[in-house]
Image (cartoon, rainbow over all chains, first blue to last red; front, side, top):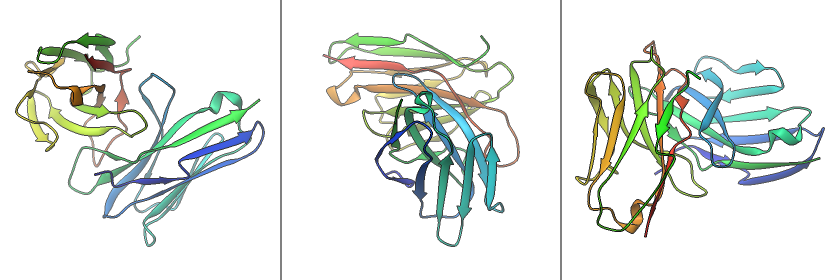
Length: 111
Length: 115
């Protein structure tokens, strides 16, 4: 079963708008990671946030983590058509090396 | 290109045949992972190596599946007596050893289609 659950499952926005995706999980975590996947390709690591961090930025990406609510969000600001992809959160459970992925948010950015 | 490479990119085979996939990780990475991904879903963990030692296996990895990493470099994933339900994208990833879980670097996968 997949522990990380993303919301929404699909999101369609116009270029220039912001896109927000949410991830909820169930267990204690070491860290939480966000990945992007273009159609037919492998996943690309975007950002890692540790359990003792609350917010992290990387370029147009902003990730927040609320361990009390067991949730995280990914914000992409000023979206571009090239941001069109599926975005996955991945849970790094304490004591395990493998990641547990959610089912993803499919983002479509209209030019 | 020094990323993770997987071979072949596509494999079409008849039910009941055996298939083998290869993964070449980033050279300095000592951790290697195999995942399976079906359409519309996120990757599901199959197995993990640290150097040549297979340290964790998922319940998804039935006895028809076997993975090896003989010299701690490349890895192979074999599926014996393939079934329709084995159709999926098989992804390999590698990472550095370090405290906690490091970012994983993925290959572009091998797409398996069972006829």
